[in-house]
Amino acid sequence: MAQLSDDCFAFSGPLLRLEDMERMIGERVMAVDDTERVPLHGARGRVAAADVKAPVDLPPFDNSAVDGYAVRHADLHADGDTRLAVTGRLMAGAASGLKLGSGQAIRIFTGAAMPQGADTVFMQEDVTVDGADVVVPRGLKRGANRRLAGEDVPAGQVVLPAGTILEAQHVALAAALGLTGIEVRRRLNVAIFSTGDEVVEPGGARGGAAIYDSNRFLLVELLERLGTGVTDLGILPDEPDALARALGKAAATHDLVLTSGGVSTGEADHVRSAVERIGSLVFWRVAIKPGRPVAMGVIRGGNAHMAAFVGLPGNPVAVFVTFVRVVKPLLRRLAGARPQTLVALPVRSAFAYKKKKDRREYVRVALRRADDGEIEAVKHPQDGAGILTSLTETDGLLEFPEDVTSIEPGARIGFLSYAQLTG
Ligand code: AMP
Ligand code: MG
Image (cartoon, rainbow, N blue to C red; front, side):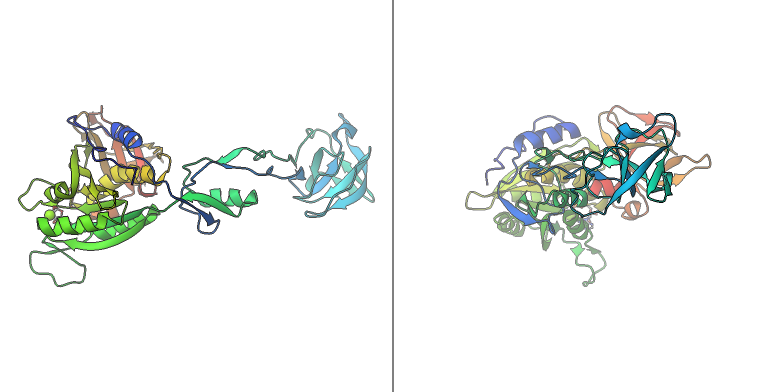
């Protein structure tokens, strides 16, 4: 595959800042280039492969925004009521053909095409009907309650730029423009493994020294939310040959091979050496906490196919944070999606905090309404990288910028919700 080279993840600095990491991904990783056309149902979550332009105006014709009376603004008295003769009736969907003469009004309903000559619509609540006439008050602006053809989208405008991840509203817009399908990039395929002799399948036999696997379940759900295909390849032992064999095989048929555990420097940490045998590997000492160094690399899968490789740490919270801040930008790039602009909305911190300079830190917090009515963020009492309940009992992460070293309670810090981070 052309989107990766042997050294695309090479990085020689001591600590890689998040923004530099995202820039490197943008410069060195190419999107998969296969595309397919999908029908609107089934397009949500896919990535637009090319700019989609509006083939027609939206709305397609001038129409009424309310139920009421269409009039000519030039007929209205500036200083008092105006009496107009009601000469016709237009329901939504009716072919118009009606023409409005001077001194006339036409009864009109929401969505009906504006009759020729009319430029303004009175709401029915604002007028008085008197036999065959309608009496309208002064003061309405020209063009009120009228929707112009193309005011939402003029024909020819790009409505879905290439790289848009299609959400419900994008699909609705495509439908409103009469499109029946959208050209999208092919779906990514990601293979995941857990590693560790102590890790067993939930529900399986567990001796005194084993733990149930949670990382694979975390990763399957996170990947599915991002719309990738996922192959769950189970748990690998801490054994270099078995690791190299399984990872190499997975690389042949996947865009990314993702593991957790076994990437630090312990004697049982063999993922690094296994990957070095079948591809190349670098360490990204990404300047974030939690998240120890993340192993990044490529694995040759045969047939000149290169799969990306990411080895995440073993502790579940570190898996979560490195997934959303490192793996997600990589996947978006591979998928052909535009980088996400994560907007951290400032909330008031209920706690004091100290941190190292030059590192971005993410603190698990719950939001609550303080006595003065403001939203404030409360830190989870346990901040170990293995404490899964610190993720289930909180609402998101406070993002402490690199240059901050300490804050007092009351400081305003950007908050990222889990929904934002995982979507
Ligand atoms: P490691 O980096 O392999 O030393 O793992 C770090 C910590 O994460 C250890 O306490 C492991 O038991 C734990 N861990 C590793 N893999 C998993 C997993 N799949 N599910 C839950 N915990 C894990
Ligand atoms: Mg391990």
